[in-house]
Length: 387
Image (cartoon, rainbow, N blue to C red; front, side, top):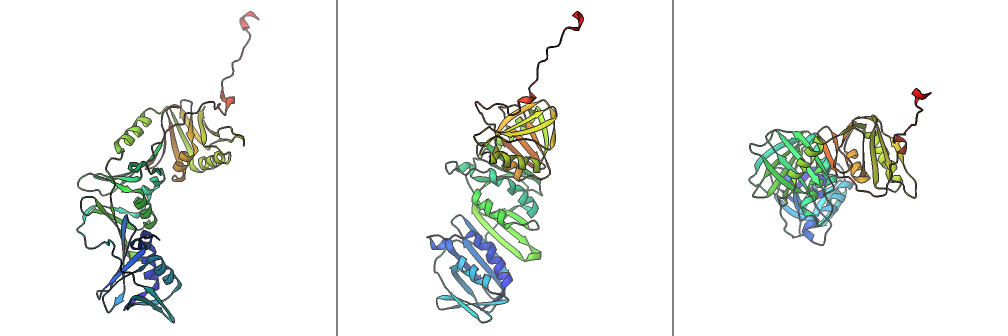
């Protein structure tokens, strides 16, 4: 019999069952419980792409290894409190708590679990660092025909880690300092795995990254204060992500900047909402005489125009961009952000601290400048010499 506190079991289940799916394939819907007399309970799930294991501690007077429906077990445990006792009887897992007794059918369906693999450590990240890297996930492609871009690309260097994601029209990049590996290494993590990790990692966690085998990466998430011990294993994607091209694109855009805008994130985010309210994706950003202006395209609904809270330096410049791509960048920034414009035909950079987004311009025909009042007005003055 296993005896465990409801809070400990619920926390472990809540984490590991995120790697399970309600699926016609039974193995994808199961959680496996493995416990022996050493007092360690392993909970394992698999969703066809990622294997997950959570470790928690319990009193156990016998060896148990059973698989049951993951979401059902989680739902039952959430209804219980205090101490829970689990035991295996015939073809059922029995849960008892106070006067409650619930039986779940044991499913004899094998699936991959994380064992005692030999892991080569690459780097250790703080939870804060990993969450910062995860800011670029919205930039990954959602087009199933572009699998090479449906990844989170990580580059480990001596003392930095660079995360990149792109969809062909925009790209996000975050660079953070770490105690890096002995040798540089790059890896493309499937975007579904990266999103799963982003929901599991909290600021005070430690994330250890390692490799087991040729292309199997291990992510161990721990927090001693919360007794958190969660491990995910996944097979990496093909190594043909255009990392170098994105870095070159960012550097070229930075060097060719003619107008440098500094604006408040809150002001930009509010203005993008106005653009969407006009049922428009076309966003016009203009720097003129030190002022930053933004507008939507003119539609049947109307046209939004606003002056952003911020300043502009350098030459006057204007560009049309997709509101969706600008919103992605604004949503992951805080405080002040910088917008670098070269001209209306070159990529724009949006930067804030360690975050950089590069956005391709929109080539629009027929759209007029929403701010015609900025055009110079020719004045015909009399010739004073003849007066």
